[in-house]
Image 1 (cartoon, rainbow, N blue to C red):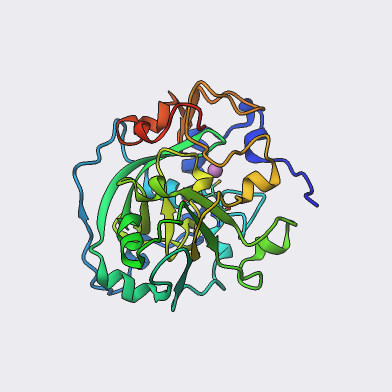
Image 2: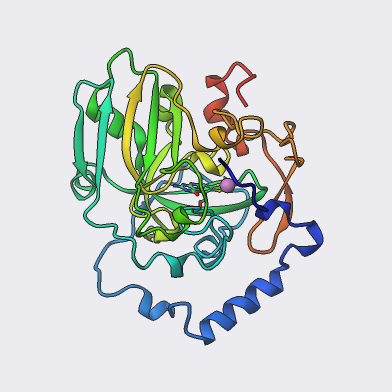
Length: 306
Ligand SMILES: Nc1nc2c(c(=O)[nH]1)N[C@H]1C(S)=C(S)[C@@H](COP(=O)(O)O)O[C@H]1N2
Ligand SMILES: [Mo]
């Protein structure tokens, strides 16, 4: 049973937090010692910043790091709030981390994330990112193309889809006990979508390891689809022959489809998708078809997969 709760997107426009309130909030949090000062954030980890792949460019400024790492959707930590999630992640253990790969592949295996990261070079890409609730950002993700991992495990011809599953740790993720959702979170992609050059397995943001609230230690980034497709803290990837069920579709099939490709002309049943709002200012911008990635993805679709 799903108890319906008020979502962020149901907040009336007039109550949306204006930019100045965000800045003030941050100053207050910093003064109260609740946000780490930058100098303390990165101890002497001599990790080189990943090299940026200049192919992927933006039409807007990069979102301020504090906003992208301080305004999140991660229901396992809190299904009712987007701010302050970092403070709820202290019990969440992200190392060691294993990913189990199973199903229709010649080489099923359980991979240690550290070993995986030695196999593939990490690059940085600037991508737009758009939540179905209309908030949007533009951030430097680091990671490697999911296609590299797919090639490693050699899919069989019967593999048509990938099913992804988030870690299931109610004792480390307090939100899991706050709402009766069908945990653990699960998502899926069609094989061609998973192989698309844009689809990243991301382990970092802003040149640093992913903060826990952004999906550490490894998450998907699928920039032409609504944000909920970009599943966080992945522990399992299964190659399947039929379309896998997805978390939000299970909760509300009328509102959240399997494809969830971004289309300004297709409204959500409860709101228009014609405009998006850039965090933290909530400046409005027209939504772009496929979030502006039409040249990379349109050929995969006949036109009705939204
Ligand atoms: N496991 C898991 N993955 C998730 C979510 C979640 O609640 N749980 N939220 C999704 C939604 S709705 C969005 S918009 C993005 C937000 O990513 P961000 O917090 O890094 O901006 O994560 C997606 N991945
Ligand atoms: Mo979202």
